[in-house]
Image (cartoon, rainbow, N blue to C red; front, side):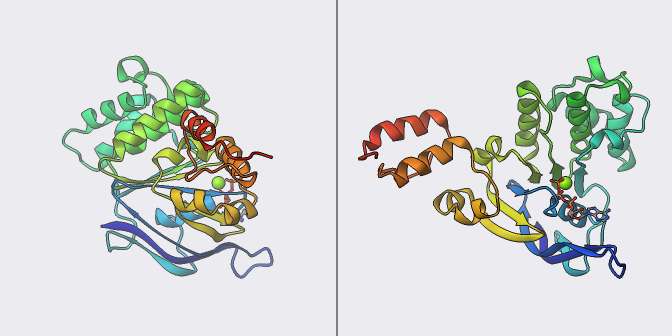
Length: 273
Ligand SMILES: Nc1ncnc2c1ncn2[C@@H]1O[C@H](COP(=O)(O)OP(=O)(O)OP(=O)(O)O)[C@@H](O)[C@H]1O
Ligand SMILES: [Mg+2]
């Protein structure tokens, strides 16, 4: 059981004078319980990839399979867009989040909606009756995540779910993702991988629509050159350790946690030049 993409390619405006390939030969596999990151410079094809995975676009080449079937079955793959506030349409936050589970005819639709709102720290008792259009940017993003979580999808595609959130908002979304992960595979597009790397199973880096790195976090930390060559920045804590290693510090592993990194650096006692 997995969401599988095999050699996907996609061109906007194919056959017209402005045709430009947005995605070229991208493959991935996401299982329930996994959290994969998709990173890449702006315009590298990340959002295009999510739309193909959700079945919103048809690939020019390659194919998407959701648990072995063609994408499109309602509720199986949930997507939160980069600008989720544009997805609201109901008069209240609760109605908006209820739409999905009701549409899917969940017998416990209301409970699913309330649970989802709770999981992103927007309790229905406080936020349920508000108009979604009066939410702050950070609240709106979390409400959009709740709207998709309420459908209990097997695969959850999140485009920049923490962009513009403060620490509490990020932690609320990260907590909701961790909870959803017990029953879903999660794919996160982000420009800020630091917060996700400690809980990430795989990283896919795109450059100009093509994969430049695809591997586990351990593989990425062991071999960051391809990632950095694509113009992507590793977290500062990782950069500091790689630099210390280059200067002779003996660091058998690269830590993501700053406290662990500091401890390893102190223990390394290499001939730092
Ligand atoms: N509807 C569209 N019509 C034509 N070209 C498009 C369209 N949407 C995206 N593109 C182009 O396809 C390429 C990939 O876009 P995409 O939105 O997937 O990038 P992205 O990696 O999500 O970028 P960002 O980090 O800025 O969100 C870009 O060159 C973009 O200009
Ligand atoms: Mg995008």
